Length: 488
Ligand code: FAD
Ligand code: NAI
Image (cartoon, rainbow, N blue to C red; front, side, top):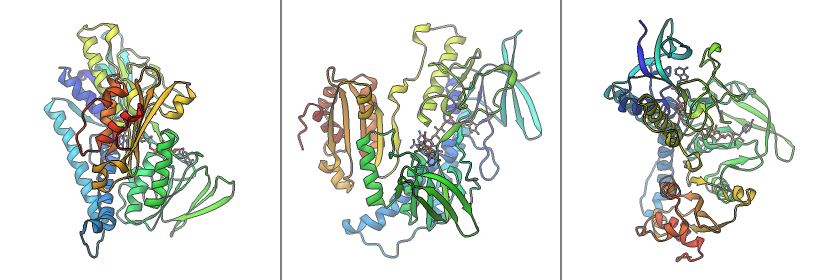
């Protein structure tokens, strides 16, 4: 007899493993199927985020920032260092240790919550009419079995968008997996794509000594960020950090010989250029991982870009089948995936227990998802940008305050950047908050809370913020919306 579950989750990234935990907390008999293996060939839970994404990238960013502080900033504190050097293999080993701690932590959480964990590739087959159960095939090498579940959550994530001219070998031409595992610092590093991965990884290796050139197809730098933030970021990343960023390029050819990789491209002036590098990172976006996820016969609806089609509640076109995270529309972010996982688990629970009404189905508000780019200075935002408010003809007022005028930022020696609040011109409701500066990955949380509670800029302006703290910059920006910032 086939193993029988209330819920089968396919994929154990932040969408799938969190959905599985929440299902189990709600008393649902849950299985989570995942096919990921680490570089040693061992199954490793946590998906892209824990294995080759959020966690390892932040570990390397921290190491490289510490190195740069020691090299460039310690002396002004009177701290003297001689013969400073970086041991790249030790840095990679530290990163691997952090990844291992987190991925094995998921195994522990599954055990604690009595979630059945199956290693292998899951494929959604058909639903049996007589008992309304979905069949799911789990294949692992030569072995294959079919299990059954009443509800299914698809959480298979995303994979790097391929660039036909560049074949990834993760030795010289790298995607995120290779870029996070370099054990030597390349003298010259090329990056295709000035998006989030390109900037984060480019920063790491630049700080450790590589000459980094980033080639970006779009004419504008970071077009999804607020224009003023993108402008400040480009200035700091090029002038202070030393990244070479070329926008508006068209890659024509990539050739590799034993010594180097040659990239021929047309620049923004339509002139032909050649870049020679020792390693090349390709980071031109990610695509949903939905190929062969479902058998042809069940007609799971997948759109032309490969996204599994879902409604606002993450319901697919198939009964009792849901999809969350990178494999569906919306930002490809770990926290978005996890919140969708929680919402779907609670929806399944209410359907199963036949409680709740259609008016109160749990869902995720995609309008207030915080974005963070972990460069230095960090970039963070939530809500509308100034350019989108203009395009939509929404009347707004803005308040902006620089970190330069903040005591804590001065003490830290991190004075680049600012916080900008955009509020509706008539109602004063906060519509967008944009930050570039130290620790804005943490500061954005206050803005998100305010926006979820539909706060006005006046609400933030009347809240006491500790002194001296970086959060005072947000406070002053809120005062600035009403033109009464105090320290500028
Ligand atoms: P994934 O994490 O991709 O997990 C999907 C899992 O499903 C994988 O384990 C995969 O092997 C498995 N799978 C796929 N198909 C099958 C199948 N048929 N059967 C069984 N298993 C299957 N986001 C942030 O919010 N913050 C960050 O700082 C951040 N940094 C990032 C850095 C990098 C370098 C990268 C690449 C991404 C980063 N992201 C970050 C994005 C984040 O990793 C993703 O948004 C997140 O992992 C998506 O979660 P998910 O559960 O949808 O999918
Ligand atoms: P991205 O979408 O952020 O950036 C890709 C960039 O490549 C874009 O600027 C695009 O214009 C450019 N590009 C596309 N085709 C190109 C070409 N042929 N030549 C040159 N440039 C080209 O994607 P990225 O950086 O690969 O990251 C994927 C996703 O992973 C992100 O969108 C984000 O969702 C997630 N992520 C999140 C992080 C975070 O939250 N801090 C960190 C890293 C990744």
